[in-house]
Length: 637
Image (cartoon, rainbow, N blue to C red; front, side, top):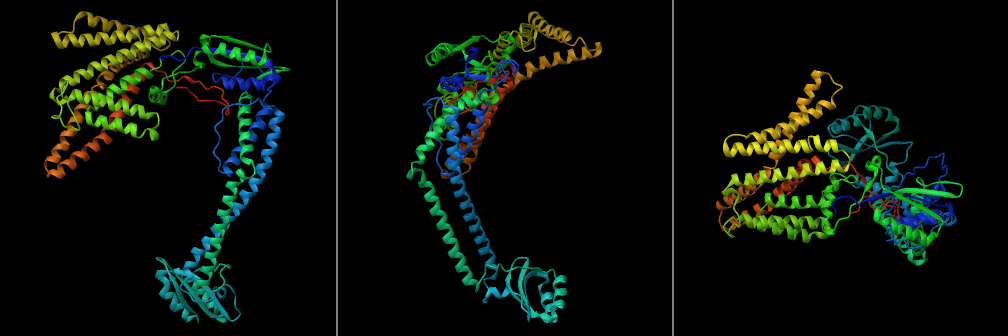
């Protein structure tokens, strides 16, 4: 629970003909993370699964599109079934191609129906501007030898002058639709004076409008015809959609598709190993990582499936491989939301301390300390339970945070901001702010001390003993921090810092400075001295500033009480109904706004004051080969 599971580097060699069956077995085992083989292309030049992968990818693509076409939900696969040969996969792929060709024809018909429907709708919108006319629109589409008829629009500011000018040119302008900026007109006159009219059109900003050739008859008749066409198209599309959805159940297609999905699920592991498995002649090999406890079970499964036709070698990771070993953590269900928040920061390195349990405990306690109210805490907990279907695993986090808030509320004697309903089991934050600040400071000191100890532990686990002893976040830094704290305590209680604390702080600082001087040996003396002084100052200030950062625990607990006082102050200025309305609304605002801010501040303290000190977070996620896909969950929690 506190470190990733111990891993083994495993190498499986077997007959190439058994490769597909072995891949399915590894996927069903669910604990094999495949990696690039240690063998070179010269040693094992073949990739036996390449043709298999291509066939699988084609079949998978066709099946996904067929499921989408028939609006079928992807089935839940149990991984049962036999290993899939390349011939079986190719035959399935041929059938899926034919099935998709039929679906593609239906998709094309559906596309044409929708294009026709959109075209009719556009015509319907265009018709709106002609609805005030009572003439056959066909006449506006034809050219006449006698009459020059034009349909178009001019800017609204120009329409009056246009009408006067077009009249002088022997034409008449009829308004039939007026918009906000444009006026639609029909202009008619003798063809003999068309040239004069054309000059007026150009000077007035005329824009010609074409009457769609589909408009036959008067506008009301055209509208009725378009409405009938739209209804017919909608009915046709609905009928074809219903027929399409019913098709899988009417001709046995659904079961064939489910069988195809099951077949592809069993083929997926070998397809996923295509780029990682190497072969020569009749021999194939694949390498990867497995939890140490899973290797014996895998060996038994291989013996049952292949007898003696395989070789399985397992070894511990070499020191130079530690950064490449995937990390696998297993947490109980109640820790999963906290593990997810840890993963937001990063994945633990192999062998690194996993902070999930420590994170869960400290997160809950710090949230409760900053947002301590019995009533509001119960609301948060009940809200987490009520919304468990929507927020999923984070329901546990909300319940835990709410419970912590309720407990601290009892300690503070606060219920929905009222401090006279229940007696405080400890004290109200405002009754002794200095004590609250002292408690927050002690918590911060303990938090940073534990984080530094975990840093030392991680460096030792990585084999970096020198960094663990003399590094700023290591033993020397802890000695410096302890000396500074001891000197500060002695000065606050006795008026002088004391010799031993100062010697401890100087010893820690001197060790850090000496190590920095050694690491920068290539720099000039002046530059070297400057670097050493800056790094020493930074190390000392980091401990001080990180510690003071925890004073926000007290600040937010005091702020919570102050907000409640503000709510009651506003309520006291109103009548009885207004008072209770103010109290309710104020509590809602405090729950939503301050609750969210406190949650963010708690995460900040965890990430920046804790994780940044000891948690690398740059580990590799464990991604086991799985039935139905190339890889399984990236990090099992």
